[in-house]
Amino acid sequence: MCLMYGEIMTKQLLTIFLILFIFCAAGCDSGTQTTQNQDIGEIQWQSDGSAIFGYIQSYALNINTTQPPIAYSIAKFNTDGSLAQTYNSNGPASRPVDPITGQITESYSPSIYLSPDGSQIVTQLENDLYRYNVKTNVLQKLDSLQHLITVSPDLHYTVSTNSPQIQPIKTIYIYDILNSPIRLVKKFDIDNVALEPGLWLANTGMFAITCYDSTGAHVDIFDTTGSLRNIIGGAETAFHNVAYNTLANDIFLRNWAGKSTDQFLDKINLSSMTRTNILNFQVENFDITADEQVIIYSAKDTINSTVHGNSMKIRNLQTLKELPQPLATDIMRYVVLSHSQDRVAYVRGDINFNQIQTISFARP
View (cartoon, rainbow, N blue to C red):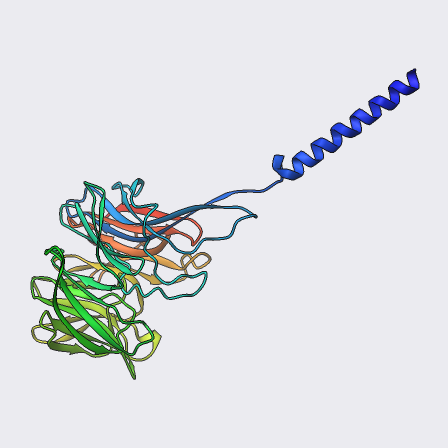
């Protein structure tokens, strides 16, 4: 009897062990580690400084999942950079160049164009133009198959193209989007439009578009009739690397003289076309105070080269003095000064997880 009892116990223990093994192999404690990923694709201050709007994508990864393609949702952030609310997370997404597939989704301007009161947003989602009402949570498609280039600050006009990127001659569309349905103001053709955002020159009825040429790129300035008003040679309106001062009629942009190392920062007065070099080294992101006396920028250096090599600095353009220490050494992308010019927002972190940081701004 004792022998039979021992045999039964042995069989029961073997059975329990086998069940536990199968259960664990099925996921009880497989050792998989889940990581949370987050990427900020754009940031813009609300004019009263009470919030920041931008793009965000969040997802979890483990050994059984693969990284999804870029799919940014519109989001609102608090003044300290923390996430307040995500919108349209299950709807159409903003998709600039996808680093996973390398596919260009023809987003010339992966930007959020925000009304002064923060109630309306005009942007491109997928390959279509949209207006989003923040208060009512209504997403309205303005037009299909239009790749956004720029929007006027009052959200009255959009500039876009329906031409594929591989097509050398692009058809430009200017829409009056205050009408419902939207009204075509003008369409015309341009050669070699660069896959970069344009810039609306506030209160002038004109806008700038970057075009490629044999030496690099130049900037064409058009009015809403489609007439070419001026050309700025060796220049580009790169994303978060361009600014316009309405009062002085000055545009700040990167110099493109045919070599990547020549992408210094220049100022061009659009009344006289006088061109002045502001920084004689390559900047990554910048913003300018309203009186044009101070620039806050990030430039590649060796302070934090193990991660991304960017630090944020402030320079007085009148005295050419800089603060002795960088304002920040953890900047990944963007430098956006608040409208009251007392705080600056930027994105810190790495490609797997980054977030918005805001810090006080003081003139040197």
